[in-house]
Image 1 (tube, rainbow, N blue to C red):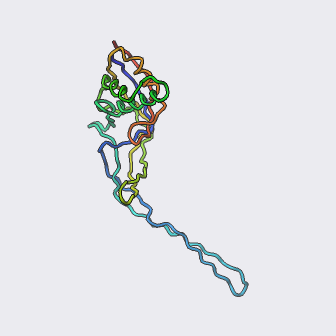
Image 2 (image 1 turned 120 degrees about the horizontal axis):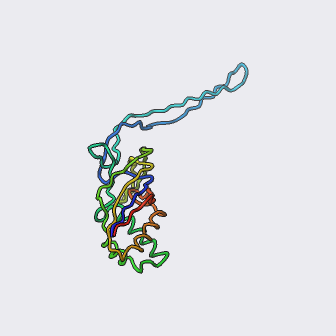
Image 3 (image 1 turned 30 degrees about the vertical axis):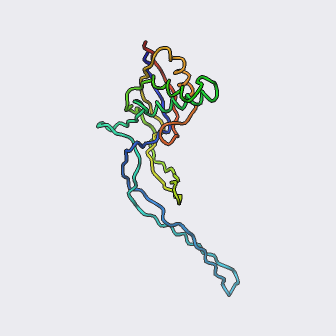
Length: 202
């Protein structure tokens, strides 16, 4: 059967190898100095504070979205092991741990092989509140270090996808879609997904 879904996505982070460069102001130094002088004629201390702030304009690489020729944003929701496929698989793992819908992780893996999601690149429609976020990230190694990558984030948008699977799988697919609304997923595991509408075709 085919299940057409209209989805609402919130806090969607860019990535997937797409970047852009933007000039941004970066704080390099911020300090304050206090000088206290005592007037000998009256013996009253006089305090003077000096604030110093130094910034630098630099080109920053920002992880962003795939863009179409018309400027629209796209996200790889569909296809084999796409974002939505992975999110549904994770929803199945939550169901396994809490409801017993699936008996094992291998059962979820086998089940998901029967689910096809189209299109591979879904258009993100009606994007609202596009902003740039910094997400600190620790790099593992002999000497752990921290980097501060920048991301384009869409506060809210909509997308349309089609799920194709055997009719016998419908009840479990619907349970996974319901569970999907209560987990964080997609890039940086910050986004949430909600179903706005659906249409079933046998």
